[in-house]
Length: 243
Ligand SMILES: C[S@@+](CC[C@H](N)C(=O)[O-])C[C@H]1O[C@@H](n2cnc3c(N)ncnc32)[C@H](O)[C@@H]1O
Image (tube, rainbow, N blue to C red; front, side, top):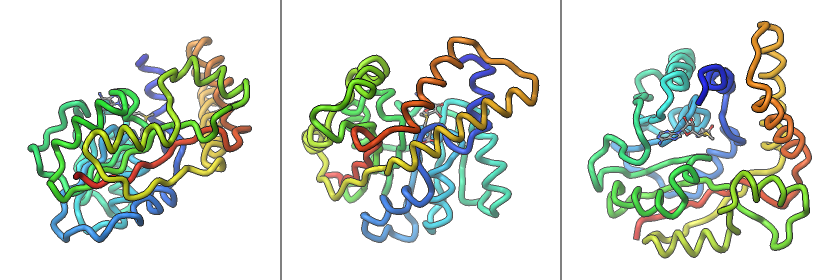
C-alpha cells in the first residue's frame, strides 16, 4: 500500500466497519475461556477489536498485522488505556503467524480473512487451534438473495467472491468447524465507518496533505454506499468451534 494511504488509515480507529460493542457481542457467544488462554487477533489493524478483547479477557492478546504503522498506533492506545502488558503487537503475515500448531484457545480476525480467501484462511487457521479452540472470523456477506443494483455494482467489482451467510456456514463446516453462532454487524457500524473515512479526509485537508486522486474517488464511492447501506450486506461474525 502506498505510504500516504497507509498513513491515512493508520490515523483511523479501525480499518473496517465495527465497534468494541459488536466485538464483545460476538465474544459473548463463546463459553468462558481458561484463565491462561492463548488468544491471537490476526490482521488486527490499529486494534479496534484487540483493545476490546484485551479489556474483557484475562488473557494477553497476540496482535498481528503486516503494517508496523498500524501496530504503533495500537501500542500507543494500549499504553494509554493501561493495557500495554496485555497486548503483544507483532509485525507478521497472517498466513504464517508465529504461533505453534494446536496452541490457540481463540483466534480472532475481523474484516481481513477475505485477503487470504475465507476458505483458505479457515482451513489454515484451524491447524493453529487447540482441539478445544475457537475461531471468530468476520466476513462481508450477502444478507439477501437479490441485492439492489448499487450494492451489486460495488461488490461485484470490489469482492466478486462474496457469498451468502448460508454459503459461508457450509464452507466453515466443511473446513472442520462447528458453527456456534453468527452475529451480523448492524448498518450503523457502516455509517460510523463512513463518517470516520470522511473525517480522515477532512483531517488531511487541514494538514495540507493530498492523496492519490483515484484513491479519493474510490473512497467517495465507498462513503456514499456505506452511509446508505440497508440490510443487503454486512460483515458477519462466524463464531466457530474446532471440530
Ligand atoms: C480491512 S483491514 C481490517 C483491520 C482490523 N481487523 C479492523 O477490523 O479494523 C485489513 C488488515 O489486514 C492487514 N493485512 C493484510 N494482509 C495481511 C497479511 N498477509 N498478514 C497480516 N496482516 C495483513 C492490513 O494491514 C490491515 O490492517
